[in-house]
Image (tube, rainbow over all chains, first blue to last red; front, side):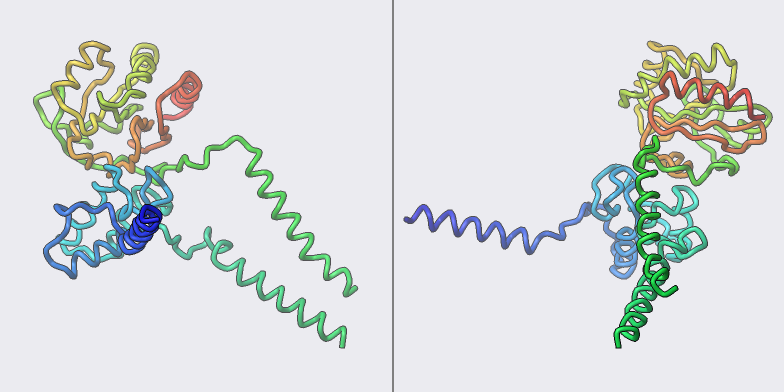
Length: 135
Length: 176
């Protein structure tokens, strides 16, 4: 009986542990900037930059060497006084828009951003039309 | 008339399905990303050279002739595999090849070239991987084909195989 309880406690604490520490990130202590506001900006940008090696992770989550290089590069550019927009552009110019986890609104992403809205309106239009008819 | 209208969603749905099936069936690798640098000028940079005493200055090396740029490292096994083809480019096609030694130990790199042969006319030392980032490189080996005006015309990610060798060969014959 004691054993059973012990197992339950261990499982629960492991579960709780993973629950509270699930946002562990790949960033290493040496990389963190002293200025907390600059560091916050760097974290925000990193979360929006795709790791080109793992592709479904941001560079904030990934511990690949390229992700680390890019994290350091972003921080260096922040220290150099670059604006967020300029940093995004720097990366997109080299790796393409694919590196941005949130695709920009432009001509070739028009369908991606607006088709859902268009389809939704068509759907509502059809429902209204249908209801009117059945009345 | 009205009934016809309600067929529209079904038709659109079938069309989307068709598009998805097409993308599924054609031969493509979704994890391969087209380079943002295609049809753009070679990035300008200066760096130390592995085999020459003077600095490598990109503006002096590109333009005037077709150049193949190959990112490699001794720790990268596929780089060793493709080395035979890199040598073929220099032997058979007689084109200028520039190597970029990515995050490597210069001593090991020199030994590697001694053992396997050196097809490169010049080699850039990219110790921190900064040059690679400027070229949009995300996984070596990567190879770029640059035309005689210094414009990037083709990029291949991964080792050069027989088919890739043939493809680059035909590109060399067709670009200027």
